[in-house]
Image 1 (cartoon, rainbow, N blue to C red):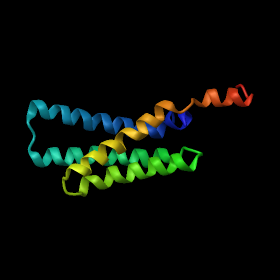
Image 2: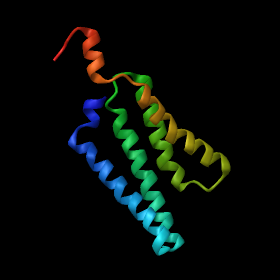
Image 3: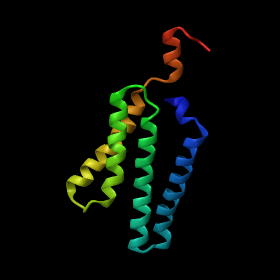
Image 4: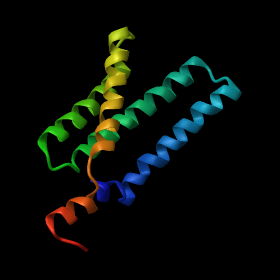
Length: 119
């Protein structure tokens, strides 16, 4: 998994997210219209959902693929659902679960050392 995240193509997600976060922070100083804020938030959450979907292909285990894929799809779809409290709660859960799972996954180097294959 970590080899996939270190790939150059994944860094595009990080750069785009940084641009969107910088645009959201600049809203504090320039007071964009509510339509612009909505577009920025939709783009940010859609990009996070696309990233979760693409990261799901890096896993070997089916359960992890399903969790990351489902969370990615929901984060994208929640932008186009009406604002209800349960939509936001499930959205927060779908944003946090992949991050929490990512913290507890073993590194690729640790897996190779456990298998007896040291590079």
